[in-house]
Image (tube, rainbow over all chains, first blue to last red):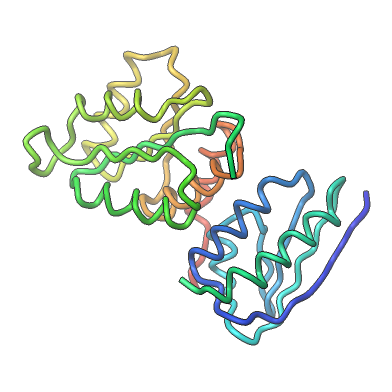
Length: 89
Length: 133
């Protein structure tokens, strides 16, 4: 299965609402998707896991997907991290 | 984004109408507002307790063809839901044994992503293991 990975530096904290938007989007992909911030890695489809990362402004976050739509998943989720964390909440 | 397929609905059963409404509001915000979340809190007169009438109505409102996950908060809320479901053996309703706030948020986000009844209930129950720190 093809794997894909990309990183982004957060421009805002990964609060509840952006974490929710991120997990909803992740759940729509067939691929297994994980997200890593610092020493913590979470299932991107688990909103509680994503919130539990405690990822904050300026932190480098990596999205990794493995499966049939891995490249699309990574592109979509990186875009959400770029947008959603700018809004906050 | 328009939803084509039906989503799993969520019913929140609490002794307190304010608690059920508040958790519903939070879960809707976090999940983007696409999922039907119905709060069934308090007695019919608004006092603290659980109402079989309210829960029954909530289960009907939350069903849109994909089933319903119901989360009770404590004690008699659990008993009320279990007694009702025992009378509805054919209903596509699953009780989630989960922490109320975290389970509701996890279930609603998973439902918003289009997951099925089993996956939504599982997401709620996995909330026991989610660390906050």
